[in-house]
Length: 256
Image (tube, rainbow, N blue to C red; front, side, top):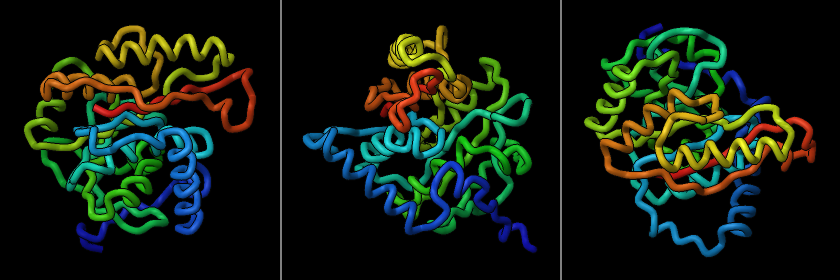
């Protein structure tokens, strides 16, 4: 097999999101119907976004919240996007790209950007869901887009700022993948998430309860360079899906 043929197959279709093209399109259609109900008067021409912040749980829990950000971004003309997420299964330092040249989902194949600024590690990418769950949304809204998937490990200030500057200098649109608080009772989770959301809006990395704190730090540095700020679009918790308020996860979407 030639290097150009390397493809990362979908690892989480059928668990985090639907396993067939038909079911993905049906689910997105349901998200669209809900979006019209909740944001019917939203004029997408009012938005000029350089990126979004989205959750990465199973679509049944956080899919609609993520969809709201993609909907806002859909008015933009985007050719390439850097997709940054945390590592849930591997411990390492730095930011790593994937060595594969294509990523596959039930909606088809998407070309991966090869950027020499980043080291590559296909093992870290192979079982990371925080980026893969974004792929069908990106394919749906931007069929010809190329993506740079980046998994973030432990980061120091130098890596954060250099990564952000590279993404800014090379005119990437940026997607930050993060959930908010995990497994608190509903009322407590809302209080914690309110603090986190306010800190994100101020681009301050203290007192943030979010698994994607390191991708967020890169996002804050990127926004500072671009002289832009994040704006909240939607917030809810996993209790919305099935009603269990005893232990919930928080989700929010932003554009910037």
